[in-house]
Image 1 (spheres, rainbow, N blue to C red):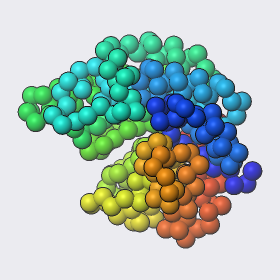
Image 2 (cartoon, rainbow, N blue to C red):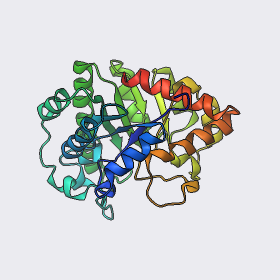
Image 3 (cartoon, rainbow, N blue to C red):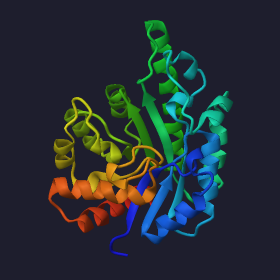
Image 4 (cartoon, one colour):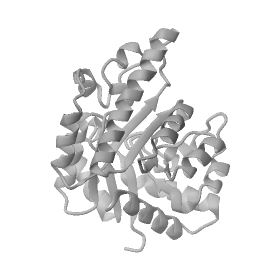
Length: 285
C-alpha cells in the first residue's frame, strides 16, 4: 500500500457518526486510510477503544480529558459559550476527574496509542482576573496530571492548544519528559519553531483552508519539515471545502495531504508516505 495514509486525529466516537460509524470506518479502510480516534473525556475515550477493538488493523484509540471538560473549568467560561452538541451529554456528566479511571482504561487495550487530546484552551475565557487565574490554573493542573500519566505509561501526547501557546510552551520547556504532537496547529512562526525545537510534531487539518488573521499557512507549512508533520481531519469538524459535504470524515485527509504537497512542491505520494511514517513512529503502530 504505497499510498496508505493516516488520519492522525479524528472523532468517529462522537455523535455525528452514531448512525453509520462502521460504514465510515469500512469506507476509510477501503481507501487505504488508517485512523486514530481521539478521546476527549472518559466516555468518548471508551467509545474510541470499542471502535478500535472491532478492527484488527488500521483503527486506533487515544484516552484523555479535554481542557474545557476539566471539572470547574466550564463553570468559569465566559457567557455565550455553548456546549459542543457533539459531546453535550457527556460533558454534562463530567463532575469528577479521577486519573486512575484513565489509567485503567488505557491499560485495558493495546489499541490505545496516546494520551489526548489534552492541553490548554483560553478561547472562551472569563472576564475577571480572579476567575481567569483559576480557569487557567485548573487547566494546567489537569494537563500536568495527564502528562505524568503519559510519562508513567511511556505514551506520546496529543496536545490541544487554542489561544494559549505561550503558556503551553512555558510548561513544556520545564517538563521536557514528553513526546507528541500539537494537534490542529494555529500558532505563529515563532511558536512553531519553539515546538519543533522541543521535538514535537505539528498536526495540520482542514483549518489550513481557512483564513485566520495573523497566520500565513503557506509560510508555516513551508518552514515545517515534512518529517515533523502529521495530517489529520479532526472529523466531524473542519471539513476541507473540496469534500463537498458538511461532515468531515477520515477519507478527506487526502485533501490536507494534497494541499501540503502543493505548497511544498512535492508529490502527493511523498507527503502521504512520509506523514504515515511519522504517525507510525510517534504512535508506535
